[in-house]
Image (cartoon, rainbow, N blue to C red; front, side, top):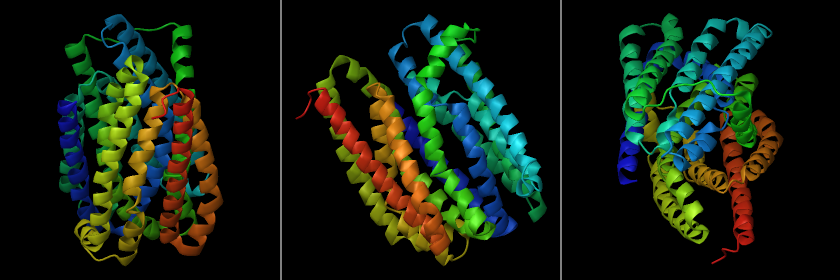
Length: 410
């Protein structure tokens, strides 16, 4: 676990620093408006990423971690999951084509959206869930950093004026695709796992296993990336750019909690099988200590928000600074919500993941349009805070309900 944590820490350090290095340069060359357009395209394509992922980052990771000693079973899991993801990617591409040529707003920049979709292909080729389940995080770290470096180098070399904006998603997609191809080579070389066609009945089993989590992820993307689309429709690309600067910082910092979640998920999956009482003790320990660490980050983020925005954008942007300070608390809320989501997956209680995210999505729909209309980007920040608080409370309620049912109340 220590090795995995260090590997993902290095990865997250690269994920935090490398993309942020490009932001001041892109804003200076492209301007906030085009930067907002890129963020809008990314938000749209996020739906197709969720479609191709289909919840396998939890269900497939769990199955790999449980059956890691059986080469035959792992081959079955790997082949079935990759088959489903490939078919869902084709479906996503067809849906994207219909959307692009059905709405005038999308038609004007159709090539931009197709280039952005390349990142979905790269994510399908890069089976992070496999390495996570095998607890070989160093492979994820090396390949992900490679993708980021490819993206960063090409940005500085080839993007020199506003008309080059379409190269940003192209280079980002290239980085993911190259890393994905290399990862498949490693899986064959290091683990002796090759793709083998599986029967329809076996594929149906894995498809059904991920259904609740997939539906919940669709709901999640509606109240995350979907909110940016709403902001874009109610305001303009410049406002979206202001919000995206703050959101990028929040995602980068809150992903520290994601590191912990990803490292402990296979570990807690095994403990659950061995001892439920011990599992709840370990979960409480992780929850408490993660909260302390993330709370410190929240305080630092609020205090240094102007400096961080200035360093990232190359200028003082008051609206981005205000949004960042409002959203700082989500650095605590987002990872804790993810921890509970994984807990439901460990306990094979995927229906609660579904319930929580559906209810959270409904709350988001009730608030987001009004708050954006009244306060713009700041209104969206307020909406995110209220929705994440509701999400965490509901997660906690269902978690302790399951705990009582399992007669493990301390």
